[in-house]
Length: 438
Image (cartoon, rainbow, N blue to C red; front, top):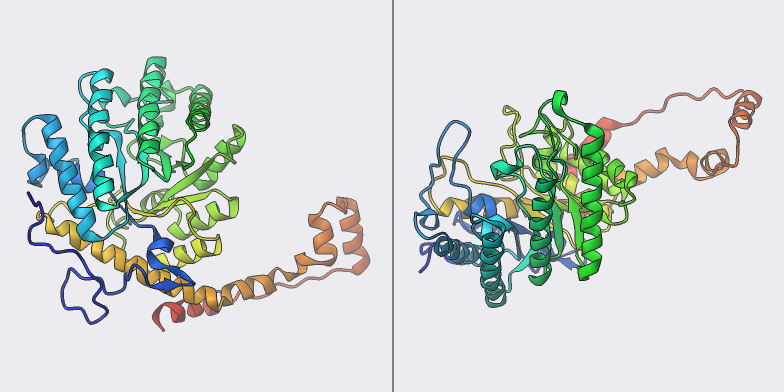
């Protein structure tokens, strides 16, 4: 059975393409800076928004009537969902996919059922990967949706909830390794608090630290070669979450000696919820050496929650991709479309429209960012601006060769009278616009 019978495999047709389901900019094997587009971008489609979400929101029930959402035996529907997902991934021409454990298999009424159901669906996923050539960018465990996790998972006041979450992560990590996953993501969906009146911050932070150490130990025990990732998010659904942003996650990792073991998976919409730009979060993670992977989406500036819309700004993503390229590009990470069609986009074909447009936006952003790298006027300006720190007293101060008193004596002896120098922001913004728009 075909779930998308009216859709043929999406092809690159160039800028003059008339079909709404054709790539205008994404040419998978086109070389950019000596590497194919597909290898630069390592794009993935997610299982949950595309094949699990029913189109519901806080004010209304699901609007979608997907063939794989129908009533019936839970495992039978999981098989249909897998069939639909891999048909979609293959026709879209994307190289990777991502999932939560309970996306691909029904949770069941017990841990025993959960493990058995998941094991059966792993056989299915493994077979479909072999048939299609699709690869797993990352797997993760859903330790937030079930009501049992209302007070968190690893940070829960009940140690049995900690153990239950550990069982899920253990199972999902093993599954990710078996499927050849390039990464494993830990998302603290409800690791936070609603009120400090019932919350012991010190205990919960220590529980999270212990949980992360257990995950790292298990990674090495099973020989998983992928990267462990934490996905920052500031709030929603909780009032405050412990993995607020990239800088907060880095502080947490340093505190528990994990900064060499875990990196971050940054989502655009989570960055904006934290009051940052997407560009800021990528640049921060790169500067701290913890940039791992990216969830590409966007929010709505008029909504204060995580709307998970498809990315559509070449301006924003050019600067993001510029930072990724400057940091050496992805190793195990990539761009995962943690994005969903709108609740009124009712037809299955709308899934293609959302992804095709987003893939073109990323491809065009890559080309524009590559142009900025080839003639890196931003780097030249920054190098000139900070040149005083590369030699002389600037270098001596940074290297710890001078005490505070020696630095002060130097300033008095030289009668220093430094003046402000223009940061040329407007000029630099113009340079970026010329790179993007020509």
